Length: 253
Picture 1: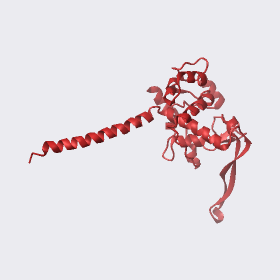
Picture 2 (picture 1 turned 120 degrees about the vertical axis):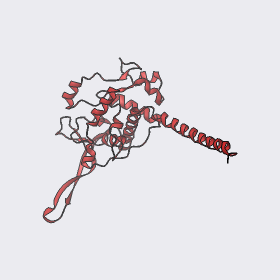
Picture 3 (picture 1 turned 45 degrees about the vertical axis):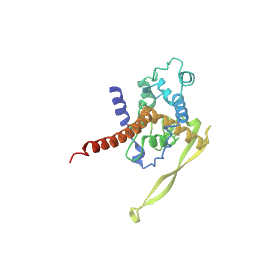
Picture 4 (picture 1 turned 60 degrees about the horizontal axis):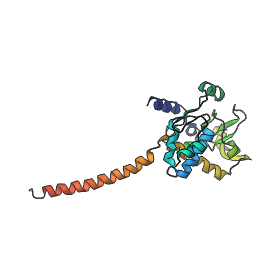
């Protein structure tokens, strides 16, 4: 419990700068019940995210809940020294990570819930963020992000997405002496294609985000299913209780 509280506290410190900058969040496809999507997302997470980001509240054997058996987990998603019952931790030293990236990469166990806000869900934030990296040679990593300006994280999916740059348009705000010319972001321009097309990359990101959302609360789908049955049971119980009460008092004036 203390570990979970620490994780939420750390993640809460990461500002959702997209809202401050007025960058529009895209709606993330809801694939939380699509097992194939969750499995693809788990593979992306292990291959690309788990090198720097831990998920220390999640065990590999929980992946059975999305349709994977132990052999599939061992063959496709485990590193050599890991076991199926192990937590999803990393070997990177936090001090080294802070020196390399400027900040220790946050634990991703509950990142989808931590990023939720009044103006967008956590999945919307993550879905937009992972598609908003662009080349910026002024940054130490060579990358920047439109959703999270001056982010310390490099673009780990650049080989899949390719390299893009932001295109700005000039607009005039105000009139007369108060008029000011400003540059506003308009769209991204692809300057070097990746291994995936834009549509394929969007699908891959949706898979990853769906997995991160599932990982934040693995029992949510089961809880919702049980909730429906509980409500149905209570509804039937109310009717039976009402009729029993009517039968009990019918001869009493």
